[in-house]
Amino acid sequence: MNKGKRNNITIKIVSVLIAVIMWSYVMSEVNPIRTQEFPGIKVNYLNQNSLSESGLQIMEPIEATISVKLTGRISDIKSINPNDIIAQVDLWGYSEGLNRVPVEVKVPENVSLESTNPKYIQFKMDSIITKEHKVFLRTTGKTEDGYTLGEEDIRPSTVLIKGPRSWVNLVSKCVATVELTNITSDIKTSVPIRAVDDSGNEVRGIEKEPNTVEIGIVMLRTKNISVEPRIKGAPLDGYEITDIQISPANVMIKGRGEILKDIEFIETEPIDVEDISASKEVSANIVLPEGVELMGGGSKTSVSVKVEKIVEKDIELNTNRLTFINLNTRLYIDKESLPETITLTVRGTESIITELDERDVTFYVDLSGLELGTHNVNIKTIIPDNVELININPDTIQLNIKDEV
Figure (tube, rainbow, N blue to C red):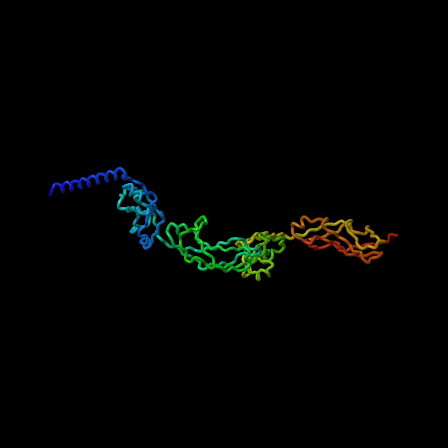
């Protein structure tokens, strides 16, 4: 090789070395290495279908993000889009409860992964369970006056609740709601089922089978009606029932309108007073006609039977109080011929007779059609209704009617 060719090769080698040195200088000084943080990188969940197949569901976190730090030339770092960073967790093989799952991060080839925060994500997983609940009827609004709810029919009467254990266990009851405002006839309707917690808030994220139920409600009429005691037997001789008190004396009943319209009162079961000689208080069942019920529950009433002894008493009346009616105005009575007193024998209950005196008795003689002369006339009395007149002594008196002239 001649000297010229060797010089040419040397020049080329030197040129390459200079180019490399210059590139290295530019890269190190003009395009230096940097580390940059990329926050909010969404984490992809792998093998979620395996959780479903195992009867599991992720409760939290529903979504997760991480922060990653990448190192590389500034030009490469600046060219990276967050979507170029792939973060993922593999959920295969985990069980119910808390699970600490590592995060796998993939970055573009021209940069390197400096750090991941967090490196692990804690997942809470619940088993999918099913529970059966009774369906309860809930009503809103107020029935029209004179109406109330009768028999209720819910079909089906139970519902299956399916979902994560935590949510299913929140369900306190399942309700079907019916509005009553302006309703006066039987109800037949289909309504959705709501699964609620102890506070009445709807529990979401669960499945219901079925979602709706058929509701049937009979609308009944109401009526305020008196309760009459039914008495059986009679007190001991010489005693009498003087009062009967019943509590409650009136009750509200419900039933079909065609049944209630003909009911004027209802009775208690028979209350036996045979041969009693003292007051008594008993609890008695109310006897209801077929198809009739009491509002508010309960079926008993309290009955107080007052019994008193029958006694007799003599009342002496001064004839000065004797009244003469229908006497001709031109005539008068010669009162000197009258007896001084008249005795009444009366009978009644002890409380009445004990308080009775002459002020409670009126006695008179009716002189209609009588003229001058001597006449035998009957004495008539007016006594209280609850008193019996046994005897008047004398029951007739002799009167001498004279002329005023």
